[in-house]
Amino acid sequence: MKLSMPLIYAGNPRETADQVAGLEKAGLDTIWVAEPYGFDAPTLMGYLAAKTETVEIGAGILNVFSRTPGALLQTAAGLDNVSGGRAVIGLGASGPQVIEGFHGVPYDKPLGRTREVIELIRMGLRRESLVKDGIFKIPLPEGQGLGLGKPLKLLNKPERPVVPLWVAALGDKNVQMTAEVADGWLPFLFHPEKAKGVWGEALARGTAKRSPDLGPLEISAGGMVAIGDDVKGMLDFMRPMYALYVGGMGARGKNFYNDLACQYGYEKEAKEIQDLYLGGNKRDAEAKVPLEWLEAGNLVGPASYVKERIAAFREAGVTSLQVSPATEDPAATIAQVKEWVS
Image (spheres, rainbow, N blue to C red):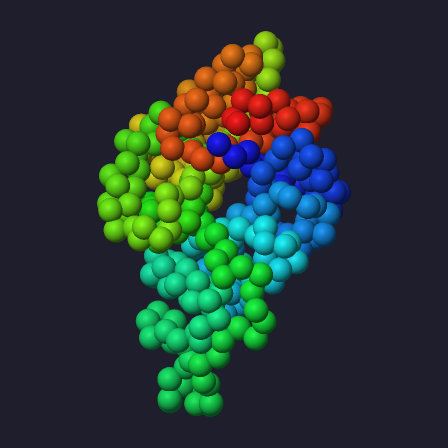
């Protein structure tokens, strides 16, 4: 099992990014860089590439709406070059609030878009001309634009002909598609003991159609890590994030994270969290997040308990344990956990 973590920053991301070299020396395998509607991920990933030597640098995630497939191809090839073959490209549909509200693009056909983007990036990395007649029309057909488009291939030779392409997915059809065509899967708010019941059939259907050339599907999931005999209270620091996603990351009837909470069996709490959060009562919403979910999705407690949670994530199919150290010495925590996952 690999060890990964998200780049979490408040304010200036450069200060946090400068700490990644120390985490790399402690044994960190992958750093994930998000960009919901903050700083763009590729800029920070390029900065990390110059500051590190061995850690994989992953986009977690780039949405498939605000950049064209050609631009995503350029990003994958460029980041892989400046990192010396350490790029991992996480893709996803994000959600309508971000796509329509921040980028001004219709949230249309997210699964089909994701599938075609993966196909086109792989095509481009093989230095084949980009040609597609699907959701994406590449090049534009006659009658659209100036009619001067022609098939083009990437100008530069990529560092690698294959860059790992991961997908962030929660819904049944999206997870099935991910298991079929992606190199890796990025679930969120993962509950190891309930994962099979929620996604097992979708993963099986997708895996049945998976090309042997891809190899087994990688999975990255995890949560906060705090090791000690009196740290259980640290779980309360995760409540705002769970409440934000379940309660406020989407409108009523169109919140994928609220749907997930219901699939986990927390229907009552999911409705209460959403009602409170959208009503402006965020603190009350946070209090409704089930402690059982917080305990299962994070690694907080004595060393023996944390090892049990690692085993649970491994049993659920996780190949890259994603952790967020909540300690004064994150590098020491990474080194300790690294021993347990190796």
